[in-house]
Image (cartoon, rainbow, N blue to C red; front, side, top):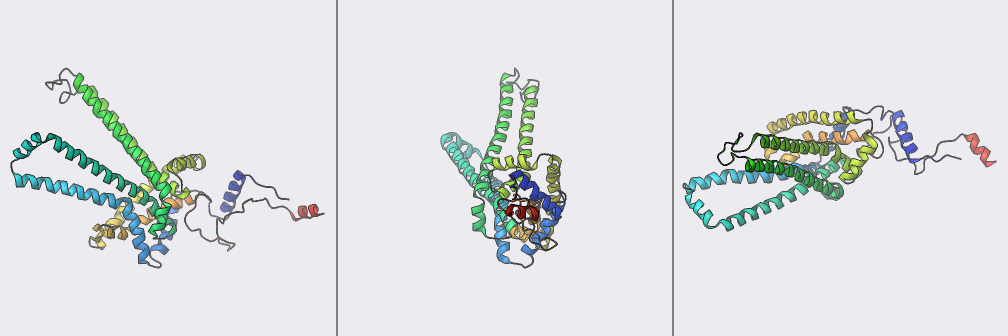
Length: 361
C-alpha cells in the first residue's frame, strides 16, 4: 500500500524530479533572458500575425503611453498657451485687476480644474495598473485578446492601483511635512520679517536641513518601493493572480528565504536589460523614420524591444517550479511528456511489486 505524502513532501519531490530532468539544475538571473527570447520569436515573428501585434500593442499602450500622452498634451497646452496669452495681451495689468475683482471666481475655477485634472489622472493611473497586468498576460500566453486580458487583470490590477495611490500619498505627506518644517522655522525665526535669520529668505539653517532630510528620505523610499513593486512584486501578482498583500506574503514565505541576493541580482539585471531595451527602441525609431512617435502605433512597433523584458520576469519566476509557471513548458529530452505536468492529486511513493503481492495474499 502506498504512503500518502504531505504537501511539503510533494513540493520537494516535484522539485527534485524536475531537477533530475535538467530543468531546475540551478536558479539563475541570466538564463531566463534566453527563455524570454525563445518565447518571443514564435509569437511575434514565426508566424507574423498582425492581430497579435496590435492586441499586444494596445496592452502595452495602456501601461505607459496613455498616461504619458495625456500628460504631454497638458504640458504642451500650458507651455504654448500661456506665452501666447502674454504675447497677445501684452500688458498683464488688466488680468491682475480682473483677479482682484473676481478672486472667489478665480479660485473656484482653479480648484475645479485641479479636481478634474486629478480625476483624469486617477482614471489613467487605474487603466495603467490594469494594463501592466494585461501585458504580462499577453506575453505569457502570446495572445492579443484584449478582452480576456482585461478580465484576468481585475484582481491584481485593482490591487496594484490602490497600493500605488497609498504609496504616492505617503510620499506627498512626507513632502508636506518638509514644507511645514520650513514654515514653522520661518515663523519661529526672529529674522523672518527682515530675512536676517541666519538662513535663507528668513528660514533658519536647522529647518532647511531637517526639511531637506525629510524630503530626501520620503522621495528615496517612494522610489525604492516603486522599483521593488514594479520589478519583483507585480510579476508575482500576475503569476499567482492575487492582490499585492498576498503576493508579498507568498514571496516572503516561499521564495525569499535564503535567496535574498538572488533577488537583488534579479533587480539589477533588469536595469541592465532596460539599457539594452532603450538602445533597441532608439534603433526602431530610426528604422521606422519616427513612426514610433505616433501614439498606439509606437507601442505596436516597440514590442520587440519591450516583450523580452516582461518575458524575462516571467521566465525568472518559472524557475521556481509548479505554482510559479506561466510560460509554455518545453518537452523533456527523453520524450516522456511535457516537463512540469500536473502531478496526481494525492501522489504516492512507489512501492515494490513484492509488497503488493504480499498484501493481496
